[in-house]
Amino acid sequence: QVQLVESGGGLVQAGGSLRLSCAASGRTFSSYAMGWFRQAPGKEREFVAAINWSGGLTHYADFVKGRFTISRVSGKDSAALQMNSLKSEDSAVYYCAARRAMGLGFKSFEYDYWGQGTQVTVSS
View 1 (cartoon, rainbow, N blue to C red):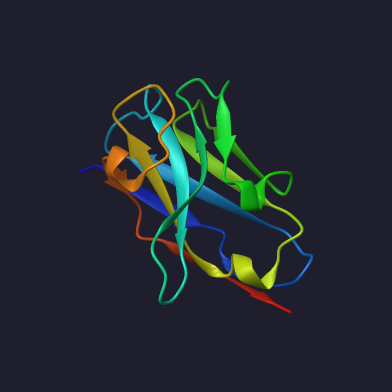
View 2 (cartoon, helix red, strand yellow):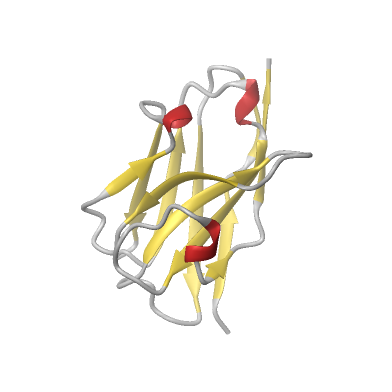
């Protein structure tokens, strides 16, 4: 059974940092691109960041550029999202996703596997 499991969410003050991790199991994701999305209450799920299969190419939503960093870890079978300078508007459930392709994906429908999400709350 293919699974993606996020961890690392929590409550942090504005200006603080969190590191989200995404652990994959059930198959190898080393040749798959991965991404992070988020969804705040009453809003649609939105793209945050993406990384290609090798980790050599990344892309970020404008609202996180310079603050968030996506990376691949554990032999490229997992992913992480380092979030710095957090703002109250970053509060959301963050989802890890993987797609059966090597290149970057920017839309939800481009991803084939999803985690259950982890809550990030930033207090102002």
